[in-house]
Every structure is written in C-alpha cells, then in structure tokens.
Length: 328
Ligand code: TRP
Image (cartoon, rainbow, N blue to C red; front, side):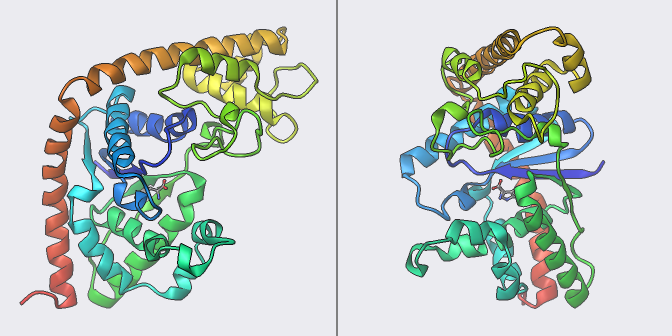
C-alpha cells in the first residue's frame, strides 16, 4: 500500500474550506493509502500564537479529524511537536538546501511582504525545510495539499533528490496531490478569494464549530450574480459556482446532477437547499466533535499515533545520520 501524509496547522479556526478541501480528502483516501495525518503545530509557531489558544486548537483539530471520519486504525494521527525526529531531519535538510531556493518560496514572500526584517521570524523562512522533513521522514508517496502548498512539495522533491544524489538513495520522492478544483472553497462575500480562517470578513467564512443557524444566514447572504441561473461557471459566476461546489461536495452529488436538480429553481430556492445541507452537516459534525472532546479519545489516539510515527521516523533518521557522518 502506498503511503499518504499531510498535516494542517492549528492556527485560526477551521473552516468549511479546510474540511472540503483537505480533511474530507484525507477521509476518502485513507482506504487506499497507509495514511499519516498530523497536527503541524511546529509550523504554527512560525508566527506568534497565544499558548492556551494553540493548545485548544491543537486538541480541537484532532477531535475534528476524528469527528470527520479519520479512522485511527487506518490513519496514524499525531502531533508534530511530539516527534523530535522532524526537527532533527529538518536541520539536516536546512544544511542541504540553499538560501536562493527559500528566497523563491511564494508563501514566504507573501507572508513577509511589507514587514520589516525584524518582524519576520527565521522559522517562517525555514518553514519549507521543516515541511520537507515532515514528508520524507515517512517515505510518503503522496501528499494531498492545497495549491498554495504545491511549491513546498516541489521543493521537497528537489531537496530529497539532491540528498539522494549526494549521499546515496535514502528518500522516496513524494508527489503532491492537489484535489480537483471542485474542492477549493471560496469566500462567500468575495468568491474569487479562498475561504480562509484569517479572512477579516467573518460573513464570508463558515467555521466548523460555529452556530449552524449563523452559517445558514451566511449562505443566504452569499454574494451571487444577477442572472438567476444555477449553472457552474467559475469565471463568470464564481459565487453560484462556489455554492454549487459546497452543495455537491456535502451531498455527494456531481455538479451536473446539481445543475439538473436546480434547473428550474431561482437563487433563493437553491440557497435554501445549500443552507440546509450545510446546517445538517455542521449539526452532525459538532455532535460527534462534542462526544470526542468530552471523552479521552484525543489523548488515546495521539498516544498510539506518536508511537508508530516515532518508530518509522527513528529508523529513517538513523539512516540519514549514518549517511551524513553524524554517527560514531
Ligand atoms: N504547510 C502546510 C499548510 O500550511 C502544513 C504542513 C506542514 C504540511 N507540514 C506538512 C502539509 C507536510 C503537508 C505535508 O497547510
């Protein structure tokens, strides 16, 4: 079985976009891959986070993974910070990558834009080398990520190839897996922008733990065009297309089926149907989340997960240290 690995940073609140664009893929793919899904909390501290909030979001993320259907029997779930081998390999990879490469990372450029050098952490800069370590430590075959992370996976491939050439075959070269465009969810008020937990406009973003009735209002108030036709056209009708994506993903119907279902409906009727679907989804997810968070399941799963993650990572790190000359 091929190996799949991915992680989400516990910063900001999790959104419907995180669920449909990432978590739902992990759940669907866990049957076909030996999966490793972690909480990228080391990456979270590349920018300042309140300690209590970071801890709460870390726990919540694991509970949401489980509530969404990640099955600990199929997916190893763990915290990045509990596996020190990530940091160990991260350092070796930093020493095998170049400032020139990191300078070309568009995420770093975006996040450091208009900031003084005294306000940009070194961690933000070396974020991609730690991410590379996360991936190749496990010989991952596929890495499902949003399009914004594709460049980081490509860098990972380059670093892994360079290492293999320099020190001998050590790492598997991972493939990025970008979900179909259908699974990218946009802001409800500004439907050409990604739905994001850091978006300042709260009306554009549905978070997974919010009041379902508030989510209904947000769907009903979503920006659309004036042509009143339920047709998928991302270019000319981004608002309606986004709602169609949400509806199609949550109801497991194809876009074509959604078009047929609503071919004689107006936007009001369609929005009501989407809102109802979102509401039911949130109610169901939140009730599962609540049961999990009230139990000791998060700790049990993480305790198991870290054991397996460490065992695999330790073997790989030993091999790396041996090859680099860091052993006795
Ligand atoms: N950088 C990813 C993000 O922001 C999170 C992440 C960290 C990750 N390490 C990873 C994703 C390894 C996939 C594989 O979403």
